[in-house]
Image (cartoon, rainbow, N blue to C red; front, side, top):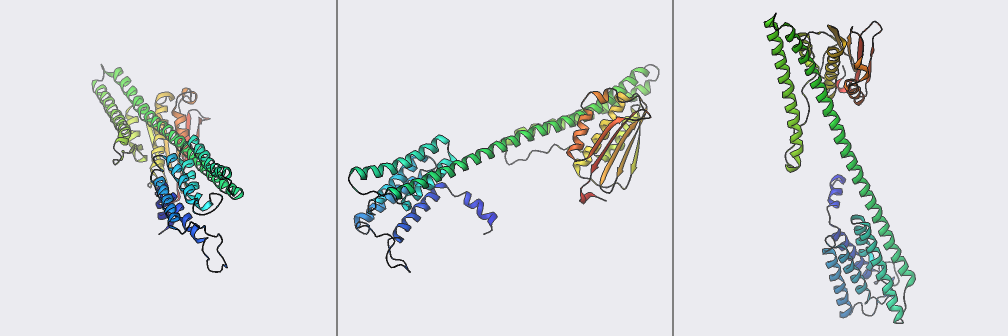
Length: 405
């Protein structure tokens, strides 16, 4: 089995199973150290007189039953499960003739303490630690009051393992909490980023359409009595632009509604919110703007080729917003759009000979949106008045190697 398959499988094993395996490993170790293994002259620990008698074996079976019960309720009632495991550790010690609870019997309680501290609240983890240390101290106190010998040093080692299990579990708990906070922060950031993207798309789409509508409506109002045919064509263009804008808004809002309903339908993937516009629509944009009264001269340089969707869309939006600014603010009848396909980058330039930046440079979200788009694609953006008059917007967008010429 490959590591990529084994790790998720280990994560799916319930904590009770790990605790149970730790208990049976401790029982096996208890018997192994009490027999003479190969290479040893005598057992590491001499067995107690009750260990192999029927009552000693019955005590071990009773302890195992308590441990099994603790494993079964570990996930639902962790403190109850730990109490059963501590009772099992204490019961299993009676037939071993020792003065303390050995580490082998306490190993399952240590594993349970780790899982409780790692997955439950800090208060529950602290209660589990105090319960474990209290049982160890109570066991020694009872033997001391009865006048029996006690293994204080060995018990301190067992207590230290409990503290270490609690500390490691607490570290895992803090790591999990930190991961959850990072995931929540990333989700919030993703929502903010998506809202900004939607805002940019709506601004670019609506601003351009409203600018064209305003121009056409103004032209129609001026010639409605003298040139009714021209007025009719202008109003038809207004209707077309309005319908296209409404259709785009419906698609966008429909995708948003589907995204909201997605949690109730986990098997159904929401339709991605990706507009279909790209550089292929620049000529259509130029024709619509020219028909509205501002001539757009489009110049293509380099061999036209497919581009990544984000670069293709951003390039079109930059041209669309720049042309919209010319229509709304430049007070000119023409502008020039240049698109150059370089070997490693896409260069865009929109220039006009109007009266300069005015409100375009000082207010609004158009330039901010264009600058954000270029920054997200690690490109270069400039927007400034031309020395000879007018305004120029330039953008250079790097193209990935697989799309390079």
